[in-house]
Image (cartoon, rainbow, N blue to C red; front, side, top):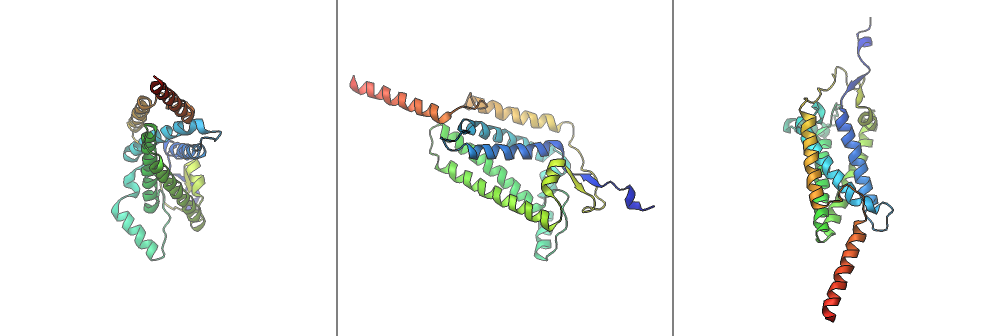
Length: 239
């Protein structure tokens, strides 16, 4: 009997919370960019998408500490792994990675940081600050996301492995990863901790903006408030 006949055809890599986070963040970023112009049909969703992204970042930070095996930062950001990965690339060798490769992991952290920066500067804009920095960070995020997408496509072709499908199904073929085992699941305490982090961000968001998670035309409201202030100021001058 062929020993490989009893080997499963795929190995579990990404748990459901990690996959949901990934695609929800993709959706939040897409909606935020598509709704960034005041005349966009989605403009009422801009702030809501930003707050959802902030809650997702809080989730991912906690999940990166206590989540499933390959979702943890320690799985792909160890200095020794980064050094080995760079050495392999320099020597023209590329071993297939079951989870994130170290450079991909660094890119993910950078994306999380830029999302957080975009949200933070967006909050400052809501409070009357200038929006130039918000736009600069947002376009930096868009550029890095573009690089990430190109890298995923390139690695899928080079490694003959559909990385996008893996992030949908959570599994990778054992043919590319012989001897691999299913990833260790997150401990039971992980999901409540992550939910607590999301709830904390949601609470903070509603303290800053009571309509944070209700799509609304913030620009129009700001315009009305500005017109009311100008009218009041004009009335004072007339008096």
